[in-house]
Image 1: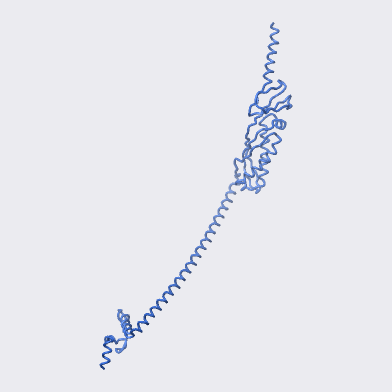
Image 2: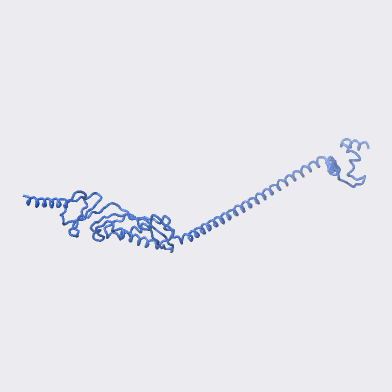
Length: 300
């Protein structure tokens, strides 16, 4: 009886092992490659419970989710012979487990070294033809698009789809930092000097224009003043002429009295005249009104 139980138990164990060995699960985030004695025989992309031949077939699971590879920083020579340290990352996923297994092997992380090498080569190839300014400005997007195109083409044979390649950080080597800073300072000083020169030129133009306008305004004002003065003098002469024409005797008396006021009315003025000078006639005798003068002339 015991001799029969032992084979039956062994058979049951073998059956259980075969049963468990023939069942495997593929998750929604996975794809499976079935190998038989190391040779690929099937690719399973549908998630769920599946069966295989126990002890003969092997299941290799691959994660089909988006993964990230951070490539190490390395020094790159640019097209203008500047040196730049670049590091970043690449996003990829395994889309063809069979191609991946045939070219890389069964280990999912085995692709990282090849991806780093491809990204490094593509980055060097693209950056070798551009200047430092292109890398540090918005032109970087166009450069990364070129790198991504080259990396995708190179990684397609491994069953890997590269979704994106990005530069995380760019920095200058220590020996180049001082030189770059000096060039940047010199460039800023050149721009500042140019702006100052343009400002000085603009100031000279404004000053010259203001002086010109001032000269024109003064000349116009002087011309207008001279015209008004001439008109005033002409009116004054006309008024004097009319006054003289109306009463020449009164005008003569008024002019003589005005001469007294200007010549004798100011302290310090001295006049040397003879006593019978015509200028002093109204000091000797007061002016006679016209009516009295006419009556005196008639009595004589």
